[in-house]
Image (cartoon, rainbow, N blue to C red; front, side, top):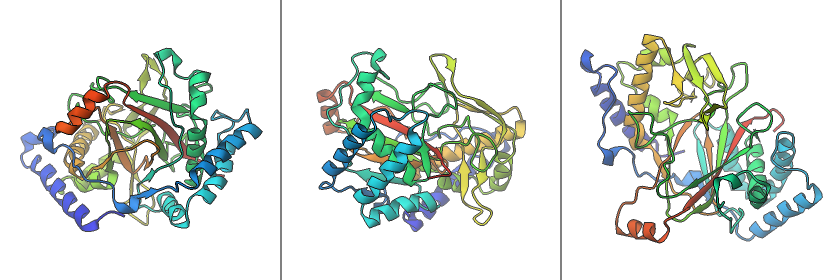
Length: 387
C-alpha cells in the first residue's frame, strides 16, 4: 500500500549496504555499524494506512459502550468474556466506521500488502488518572478507567479475525499491558549490546508461528494512545523490507537457514520470573502461502531467540545486519491521544523508543511535561476461528 518505487529503491540500497559487510570473509558475522543519525528514517505513515474516525459518532459509540456495560456488568476483558465482548463491539464498530474505513480494516485482515493502520480520533477514555505508585497497576480502581478503550480494542481485533486475550496461556494474567513512560524511563531493554539505542522486535515469540501445530503467536497488536504530550514516536519496520535488505550473495542461504527448526524462542522475564513458555525446534520465518513466495511471516526478537547450531547463528547475525540496514525504511508514527495503532505482528517489527528530543521546541516541550508523558495500552490479538 506504500510507494512501491520508493520501497524498491530503499530495499536495493539497504541490500547493497548489507552486502558490503560480507565482501571479505573476515567480515562475516560482524554487526553492521550505522551512524546514530542514520539509524532510523523519518518516513511517515502512508496515506492509505491512516484514517480519522468520525467525531460526530464518537459520543454515540461511547454511549453504546457504557450501555453495554450496564446490561452486562460482569463482562470485562478476562479469560472467558473476550470473544463475546469482541463480537458485540464489532457490530457497533461496523455502524461507527464508514464503508471506506471498514474496507481498510478488511484489507489489513486479508491483504499481504497492508501491514498496519493508524486510526485517529477514536473516543477513547479521557482524563486518565496516572497511578500514584506501582502497586496501583492492575487494581480495580485503576482498570475501571479504561472500559471504553478496552471494548473498542476488543471489537477492532474481532473485525481483524482475532480474539483479544492474554499472551500467557495460563489462568490469571492480565489481558492488557499498560505502558507508562517518563523521560528517564527506558522503553526497551539494554541487554543487547549490538542494538542498545533502538530495538525492533515482535511479540509472543514464545509461541508458534501461524500454521504450525500448537499455541499460535499473536497475529495483531493494538496500541491505544491515552496520552503522548511529548510526541514520542513508535517505529514500524516491515519484514518485507528486512528480507529485501539481506545481502544478495547470502540471501538464499540465509532464508534456508532461518526456516530450519533449530531455534529456541523464549518468553520475556518480569520480576525475574519466567512467565512465557519456551518453544524449541522452531523456525524464525515461514511463508504465509505457497502461492506468494515473497510474503514472509516472522517471529523474532533479538534478545529472545537462541540457537546452538553454528550455521543458524551465522544466519541470525546476517538477519540482524539486514535489520540494521533496513531501518532507513522504517515508518515513524507519532500517536496522539485517542489514536489506535494496529500492527500485523508477524509482518512488522515494532520499536517503542525512549524520548529523544531534537530541536529547540522539542526541548522546550520536554521541560514543560517532565513526568508521565506517555500512556499506551497494548492489546494482543490471537487467531479466532469464530471471528
